[in-house]
Amino acid sequence: MKWVILEMIIAMTNETKVEPHKHPNKVESFHIIEGIVRIGFLDNKGKITDIIQLDRDQYPFYRMSSELWHIVVPISEYVVIHEVTNGPFIKGSSSRLPQWYTSDKGNDQANEIREKIKLWTFKND
Image (tube, rainbow, N blue to C red):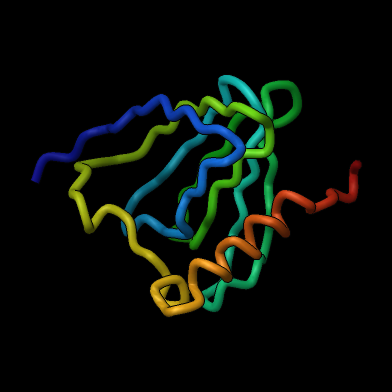
């Protein structure tokens, strides 16, 4: 199978809801073009283990080289990200959803996680 590099420009609003997910056997890099976004890292049950904030001025780039559950939460009104990952993209198998998310209350739990991430205060603030 031929491997490729996928580069995407992704635009979101602060109303965009990205599902919690991970990418098996992939590296993922985020470069902020505009706005502020937070990436929450989760354990297998959906508990937040870490949060990073990306913005152009202080922390514009992040490379995730581990297979981690994560959720992307736009903070500013608009966010534009340059995302790079290894391919190929295969619909249905390039991302995995956590087991807790596919349960009856998974969407409610994801919404609670998003709100916690939006309200998160960093120790440097």
